[in-house]
Image (cartoon, rainbow, N blue to C red; front, top):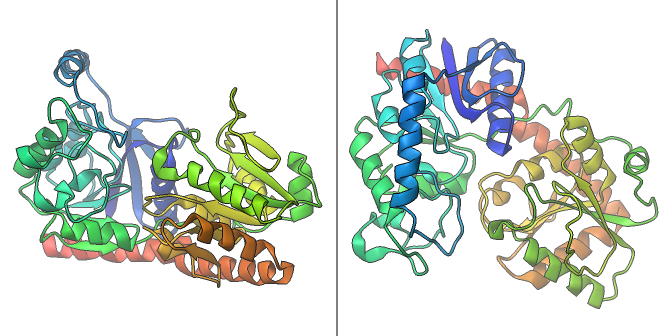
Length: 418
């Protein structure tokens, strides 16, 4: 069985890291796996890159100019990333000519495969979703409520408040509805995303499975807390709260504002011996006022630095308003660090309340602060939580477990296609 994993890039971004980990876990399980990407950043020989001819580059230049004019007045209050997916990088030709049995799509963005090209792929498709884009319009995340357009359809009269200009999302959704006549097999890393996909009008009736993203738990494991803190120059006597702000703190969905409020509550309640550590960004020129000292680690580019950052912490906070299956929480658990988050999305899959961390009521900031205080209040409790977190990560996300689940699904899809 030859599998082709398709993603926009092989290394940059959370989805790329997840696909790369899946790719190597499949190869370790003796599956003939390859990656096909638009942008290749690694030197991995099993990662192929689609080639874009001169004519296609010219066509895309024209399309981008037309797109810029067409959607000039479009604006959405949620500030979600939008992909129109009408730019081709030549990947369809590669998929139709390369020898493989099954295509495993992942995160495509706007310029990997067009919506129409996805519908023309001749091989059986398994599509692993890393956000909501596949069953929405152009949005990658939308509010998950009963009136969400992915449930009812994208019509003239049901645009959300705050969205103005030409209806980009309706245009993209209608193209998907027209182009995707052949059902695809859908994989969602979290139960929440799987439920959204099942309830979507676009994927109604599609086979939908829930398989988490894998992690090499032999590599991602606890290091010495003292040595990890020394590596980053962090104080040994402080209780360290870790927060990941990949790409900065501007993403409303990631909830950095909720964390700031929770920290102020902790401070007002008399908690003092705290050091906040933020990775994923350098110190901003204009810093938000925070009640505790802050160390910014910047972007950590390698796994060893990330593992050390987790190991230096006492607790990891993931205050997202909406999230699929954040790898930050899984990585923290693998490094023996309890996680505090709201009981939403895939975080409900990762954290076992009061066993591997704390799940606060959405979006009760006082409860989030109480959860942080509860973890920090008892050192022996933290050790027990950390050991349970590590055991949970090994049991649920280790590479052999996930590779087996994918292999069985691929075999099932291929057998039903015969």
